[in-house]
Image (cartoon, rainbow, N blue to C red; front, top):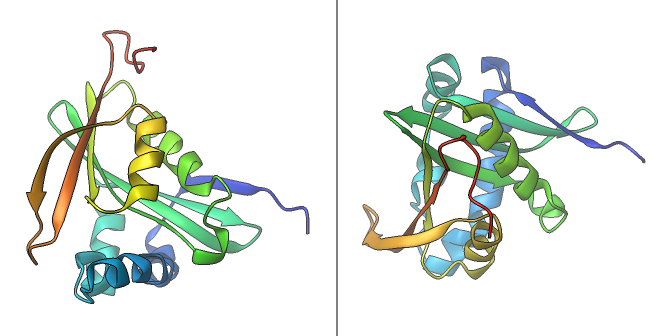
Length: 165
């Protein structure tokens, strides 16, 4: 099959597929941290629907008709808080996550001065992706279950683009 991954805004009708992919994607993290109660795994369908119906920017990646990934951003002041970046396990390592990250940044461009996100402090693959995309660890904090998180930020220059270098 030669279908290309497409990324577009998600709608409320996508909630079930988004939650399914999210849960599959975060199982690896749950195993890494020995915590089956990570928030992306306990989020309900109604909570996903609420994000899709509200001001949160939600994008979905599709390979043909199949939803293979998603990402969300909540804008608060001059910061876009990116979260729930999820890619179906069989599609990981193929650039879908990087494309989703680029797309959510573009969707928020012109409205924010910085992007912020967090990931598990022991999640080397995630930290590597974010570092390659210009994010820097600014602090560490525990999540509600006591797992250590790395908090990352990426500031934009005054023209609204990421600084070079």
